[in-house]
Image (cartoon, rainbow, N blue to C red; front, top):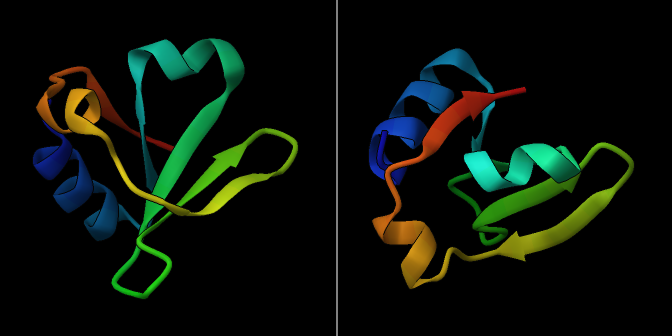
Length: 67
């Protein structure tokens, strides 16, 4: 699914989103409506507290709900 579809579903389920390539490193993003944009997490730590997707992320169709 695309990022917009994944975010809508994740917000409803109170979960995060991830891309297929992120599975190998157990990484996912928590979408927010705050100045933090999205919180990027790995299995061990907060990877970024203000992550913004790049063009490849915005046009990808490999997003899924995660977490």
